[in-house]
Length: 533
Image (tube, rainbow, N blue to C red; front, side, top):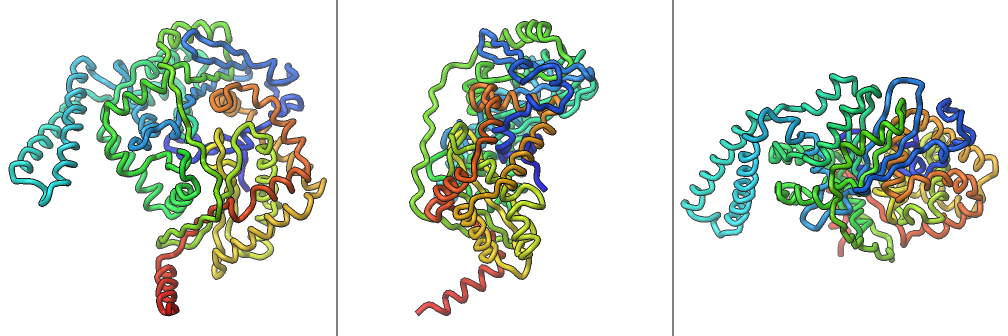
């Protein structure tokens, strides 16, 4: 059974976006089961909002059951803000943000800084020369090779010299020593997020650390960490059958919009990122005016505001940026792609759909739940339990982002000896059923009630509520967007489901990716050759 409440994965290197109903959730604050909300009729009466002069938004909810506060810092910045040739830079900056500041992570920044500056200069020159030599016939002259080797030697010496000043993982150790838990981050197509929970009397420490990190990040160990990201890409995207399938499928579905680019970036782009480009990206996008800080727990809002004003309030706003996001053209025909891998087959099917705020958005949340939420869901019952065609089947109502038009995705793994083609046909049968048969009132009521219950359970935790508040403020521009979500979902009718399924679940609007076992692909290719006239 899957959970539809976000964040699905709050770990440092998550590249698949946090998913939708949780994002579109109506929070049951009027029927709330969480004791923290018992004293107020709804969320609107509990959230205290404060806006700093530099544009930073602060959202606070008091919950005094335990002396703990959960904090979520969300930037309205993600993979879709990257330029061509710099894909993956948002995710890479998330890595670098854990390296410390001018005062954290270093034994002596005054001595470290000139070395880091020289590493950045020399590293950029070294890689530029390597590219130039690669373009030369024969790889250049012996003199070219000798000059390159000398540069590399000096670069390695500087790296070793800089390492002497590094205090590894000091940020995490600081929080750990003061009772912090859940210190983490995630990057998606729409957002970059940092989170921590800690004793409420440690808020001054948190404010000092995070305001320093927002204002004065230091890109130390740049090239080492770039190698770590490349290894992560190999493990998650290139050497993973599921990762490679989704990457190929998504880039096939999107031709213009940035949603088609993997959040981790393309390998060649990652390897060409420079310290100067990464710092420029940070200065352009990661200012306080693009950030929301949500604090939920044992807090005094007035004291929190004073603390944040004294720390974050000193940080200047980032310059205004006009972002022109390309509009994905209408798909006019099915797209299919195969990925060969030494693994068991699987299939992913995606249909283009609207993004956040569209009237059809809550309908997709309900369809998502009808098809794959739990053991009684339609796809699980039909494909896994009854027909035994698949080992697993899942749906996702907004892949790979939610702000802009995205994809409704269905993923399945066939059960041997059944094929991906059999599973695909069975999935289409269930989608056609949504078009021709109204969902029974009892089933619709059960699904909507389950979505409500999922939400309530998720928002019982301080971290869950902080996550939702910051996320909606960043992606929708106003946290109040969630206040009407439950009503929108509850208003979905059987006729709405039929209309949406008929309009969007069409052959011309779908993209299909199939993972094909290498041996099977070779046999099929040979049969095609033999059958050719």
